[in-house]
Length: 101
Image (cartoon, rainbow, N blue to C red):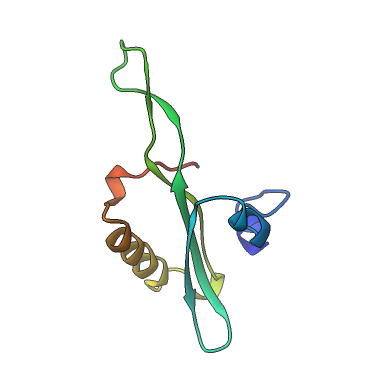
């Protein structure tokens, strides 16, 4: 819910039910008693322009679908650590991922 609120969305992007119904992966940063951040990734079919004069090309990159770090922990490296861990586990880099917003 906090992720949806931070992004100005009317409902959460990530829920337990959604995770059960798909093959996305959810990375969590957990403190002693609380969730510190979350990062959800999964494959999506996208159509992109490689060059301005070219036609759309279909591709299926790994995409960042939801990413949130608790407000009090933002700008402290928590999100970067979570993102770097995900990239290492997925065997990818930031430039190879698809993003929305």
